[in-house]
Image (cartoon, rainbow, N blue to C red; front, side, top):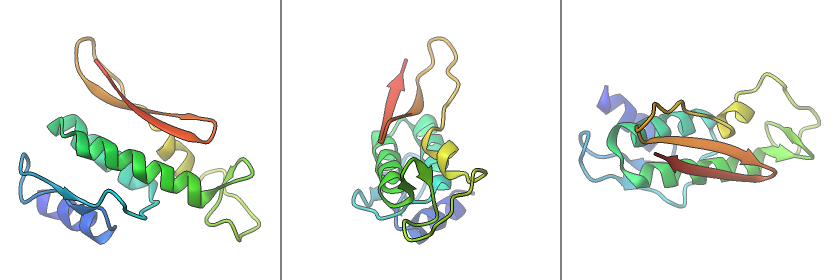
Length: 122
């Protein structure tokens, strides 16, 4: 399973999540990736490993989504198109939320205007 996740990350320009869980990742902090599914995966990796780099990269992907695919209050495929899909995963991807059990650290994300804020709650 880890090899698959590693290939997905590399294929989407996120860099290397590491040879195995717990190994030091070689992530690409300047990625141009703007796929919301990557936010979900990166938040899951952060929750399981506690590696802050995954959370930082999820923030970067969220900012890329807002910069590339958020136009005039709508999430669009790109800013040249004249339509928006209201069932697109981009909005929930950027505004993803994680449930936290009392005393358990987890990652949460919230969309505030045009700024994505990822924060750690304990």
